Image (cartoon, rainbow, N blue to C red; front, side):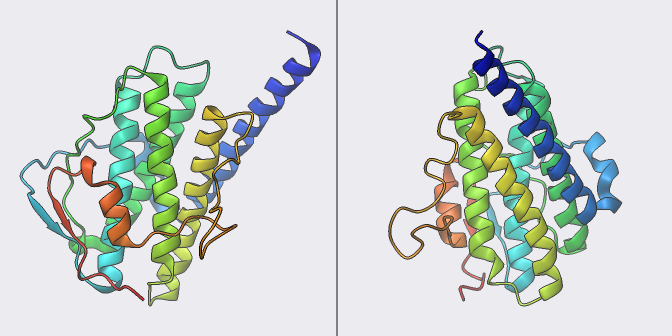
Length: 233
């Protein structure tokens, strides 16, 4: 290995360690009381739900974000439980960290919603090949990019500034997740496709409305998600 290549790998490794230090600190700062949850991830168990109405107002928006965090946590839990054999050195540990972050996010929203929280859901991951690194990372990019776009679209809809401040902290962690996964998939061009190339959001991150996000993720839901009660502006 050439000296320049070795230096590049070292730099990339250090960037990843820095990422998890920063992301972990952000999570801890916003959800310190829930820190113990990362040691006890929970698999979705409810298979009886056929229609899920996310509700209205800020509560509906929080349940919308809880649904997405449930989806991400369940995905990474499945990856950690049965990881692809062709993962590269250190990647399983990194994906385990991502799983832990998503579990904290999920439990944070559950705590915030209390008795208004939606039930635990069983998702449909049949389109993902969990024995393939490429398939798992492609799915991770889909979930992380979709999550960032969802937070971008939902933030302006909250009426509570206190909730908006908390949600924004989690959104910043999700953006770091998206950057990290892209760095694994496309190391020579990690910023490719990160921002919109045209349209109203040209040069900015993608912004999706709740109906657009639910439509994009519909194959992972074994039931109908009702978002008609959520605010739109």
